[in-house]
Length: 267
Image (tube, rainbow, N blue to C red):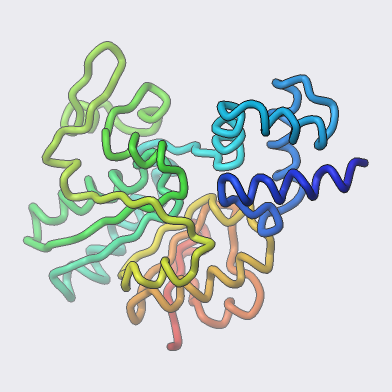
């Protein structure tokens, strides 16, 4: 089964692109590697490792495969509609500032979606806010800062919203500058817990469809980090197929089971 070759490949991947395969669920992690093996027509992990050492461009492609970036504006729209109501009730009417962190922000659609929501609330309630999107992939962060998108990113956004928020040219949608400037982006590896904590505290942390790729042990560790980073009664948003596991079920109360939205409890 080429177990020695697989271990050597994991060591090389960790060394070259700082992705630790031991923290991920093994089957999906291997599946993504094997996809690249098929494209490169390599028959074993050892052979693929040899190919990687000789082809720097393949390492970039492998990194893209291992850090899957699938996102859209208003993806799972019901979640954002629920969040808008929650922000209005929980934060806007009680405080004049809302801080939001988008974890695994990819090319920025989620963070910008939150920016559009907060921009609308700001015009009505005169509040202020900050939004930070983080991702390990420097190329995808550069794309997020650019704010230009294709049809795929726009599948769940209404035509009226496209017209209001974007300039369109030859099937490229450029987010208007006044909506871009309120959202910041930063390269960050969520596996670096000390660096994560230095980002400060937040009222809302979104980490949707990120944890499904990680091991149960890592999921529990990052839940502790999120708990420390959230302000009292802060809100954590997970993906539709993700749940809080293990001992940390005692540290978060369910706000919406359907939308996977939780409230921090305890200290």
